[in-house]
Image (cartoon, rainbow, N blue to C red; front, side, top):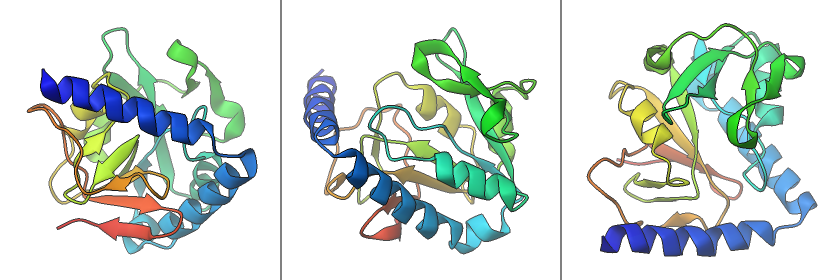
Length: 193
């Protein structure tokens, strides 16, 4: 139970810091992360990228999604299922999104199934924080832990976090899934061993 309480406390602290960021700071951070990801060899060569549409104070992904789509990468985005799992559907540009559950923007294309994430060449995931061992702190719903469990060991999985959210350690539970890299505005793409 201590890990759950530690996660909740850390999540609250970090989300408060995010809320204090100015819109300009968030936009600048989003552009820096977009550029770092677009130049990563795995992303440049990817046929399919599983990503997400940022909401609220999360690092902005809209410019990244659009850039991937415009250069011909097949992008799949999550659709939140009633049980908290994630289904996936293709992104066909900014007009292909509609409001979904919990205020998320979701693709309007036909669902491809929860297993579709396992066929992606690169998987980008939201995070509140990530540690230098790749342990990710999410929002607490477990949706991305389930999705990451379907991704093979050779696939690049990347958490998008602001500077200051790459920590030495985050509290973890047995079901938590690691990512293989993080991207920050100041550090670019940081791979974990």
